[in-house]
Length: 227
Image (cartoon, rainbow, N blue to C red; front, top):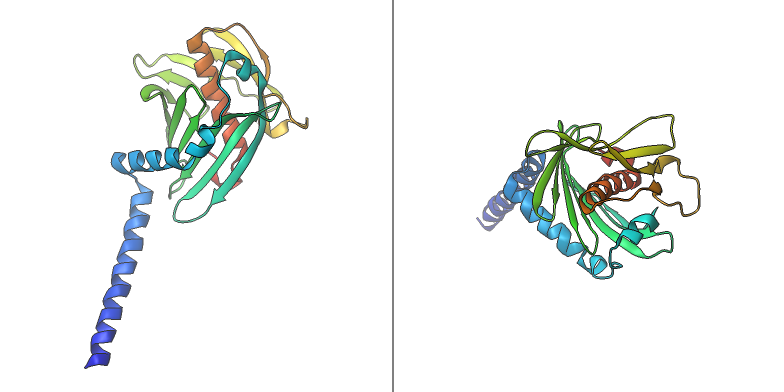
């Protein structure tokens, strides 16, 4: 009788474990808004020690942002996670990030990037992404990286992509505010992220930085996690 009872208990525990795994898998196929928010808070907490050490952000830091990073870590599981710190050309920590890839074909991920001044969140889906800056939803991002206002649908910023060019102009509205050196083809030991920058208003700088951070993180992700 004891052996039978033990077998029943073991079978029940095995069933519970299987159902739990299946539940986690289903949650990571189509995560709801509550799960996304919980994951985001967890991601913020995990990189808090890094964000506490970030250099105070000014316009000068944008000019010094490099294409290198430190503290990179990759975690595999039901969902995939990557973390790291983007540094300046002088090896100072400028931005910390956490990226989480959910299950499913195509883009299905969340990216959180923090400078000492601002928080950027990209929620990637098959048809594009949504950009939130400092808890304010700002733009819809299409698959080519163009940013469209959530208020009126107008194009507000873009990275002019060209596979044959090393320099990718960044435009905010009708103004070319700078250019990003294509991360995948940077050859210098510690290259600057921006090839040149023009005078920018605060909104222009924020949108330009959002575009650049998205590209710099994506270039460092394992190929199967890139968006």
